[in-house]
Image 1 (cartoon, rainbow, N blue to C red):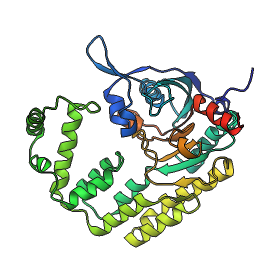
Image 2: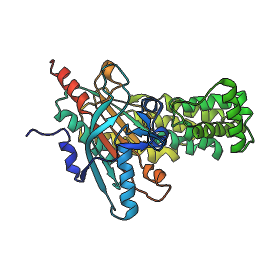
Image 3: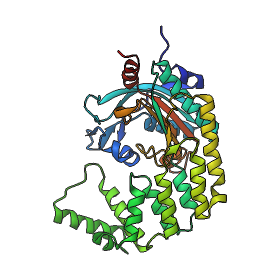
Image 4: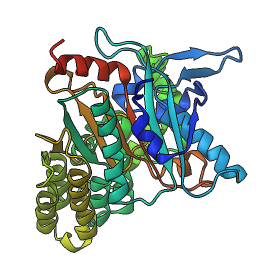
Length: 374
């Protein structure tokens, strides 16, 4: 029997699992970015509850991990591997709604540049083992911008608002623009209201505009977000230095060997160089170790601090590997760190670091065929 695509992942040990296929729709709605949430496969069950087919394997595996750790059956470092189906509405013609993901989730390991580099190496090994000879990697770190936010001289409410905004594509720039202006008149009308008051205002607005619901957001989510925006307006504009700093971080797109230096210069201009030093040293070490462990798919690779928010549970190192050109938005390999997800999903009852990697055999097969000219 030939070498399986997931063979490199077996080095981590652990167990092969096929977790719950159906999830309460609120879970992926809250944890998927805009590009994924509109593609969820949603239905209503026999109890009239909104449910969704799993859009990836990480979420149901994380739920199973929480259950194991909460019961005491799982402790320390623990790996779960899978070769199982996921479901999303196609993003492009020819893409399937149902597809297989082969991957792993590694819980409780040290949150370090070394583990990050090992994760990239495993995914790139799997791609190479599937016959893919050419591709390009993109990297991000979803802890960088929040790290800069924490170091800047801003109110606690403004920092919290910026961190929430970073979960959405374009959210930080929209936040900064909104705080520079008088803000939306409707949001202004919500200032000072409690949740019941905001709910009444939203119901009146929906009725006046003939809106029954938002297809990709729950009513509670709409109300919560409007309350957050109303509180943001009460704090006034973001100081100019902080605004320039955050915009500069968002604009970073550079080679891996330049990343720490470029961000270091932004930190120096903002007067937070000392505070940012450890974070940027980790970034520099991570890319050095990645090049050492696996130089595959790094020719032309780029880094951007905001890259990788397709699933909003990621909170640190992220990467994708894809074919060059028009198919670059459809990666055949990906991975990343989500150290806070177990804590958030368990409401603070379970704590464990988490990082995972995945490949899609259907996309690997296409990339491999093109690479051989067949």
